[in-house]
Image (cartoon, rainbow, N blue to C red; front, side):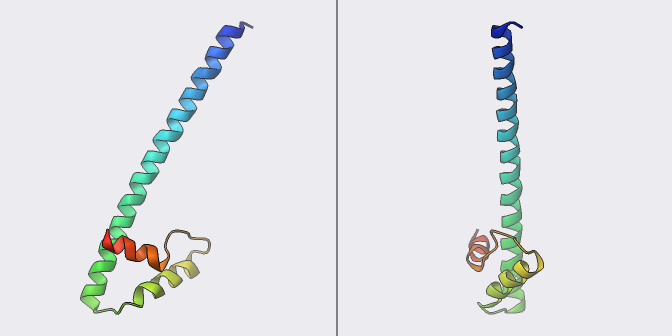
Length: 85
């Protein structure tokens, strides 16, 4: 086994792995931004059309947590930020 070739091969694998992980993270972030925008727009429209009060967002957050245990990122505060977004 040639140590130089082996070291170069490991470096190439490492680069491919890191590149793929970076690309995957970018795609996930893009999808999350789209989701947050859609949720915010939907909340804004519903609150306006249905004349919902301020507490409904708190309730939605609780209901989402109940329906999807372990769900993170959908607190009332975050839902309000999505609505502003």
